[in-house]
Length: 211
Image 1 (cartoon, rainbow, N blue to C red):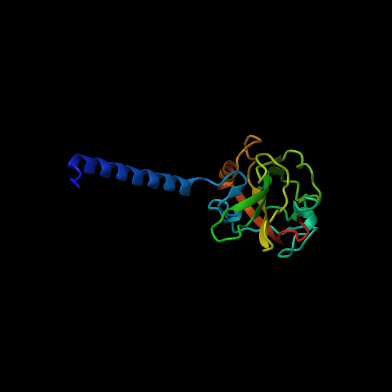
Image 2: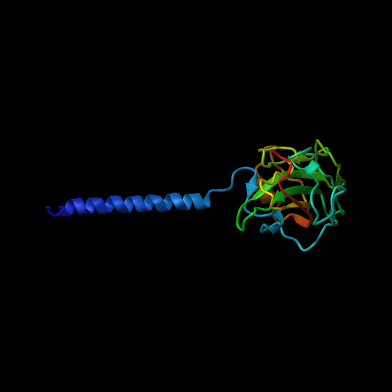
């Protein structure tokens, strides 16, 4: 067989290099692609700019910290909000943000967002069990169902228990955001304005009676 002309070898090499380059760019873009709406890389209290040394005590009338979340507060059954209470923030608190996130089942997997609520008045330190609308002045944020959505309970897809973080942040400001603000925009607006925070952790798994 006659040897491939130098021109053809160079062209082939250029094409191969271009393919490699495009593959690298595509992989890099995939790695940098932000999670879909309703998911975020980490629990909000672990996010840089939202950490604080001051703590709020957070409780629920429906379950104890570290215990199982009853199925009636999951999407498998009633999908009812379990209720939340917290101690008042320090002097200078002007509003609260409440965020509920579920940890991923594997290390490094994104969290699921189940509730975001911002501009809760500083005079409010409890959300009723079965809540269907935010307090006056407060706004729902994004969760796994989209932007500006009410509570969506846990919907764990395996029998393995998964942890859920109900977090409360005391802020020194009201957030000036549109009702359809993204989770990232809310976190960015909160950064450097968190006076104190706390969380309640519950556990949930797939309902064994689910179809």
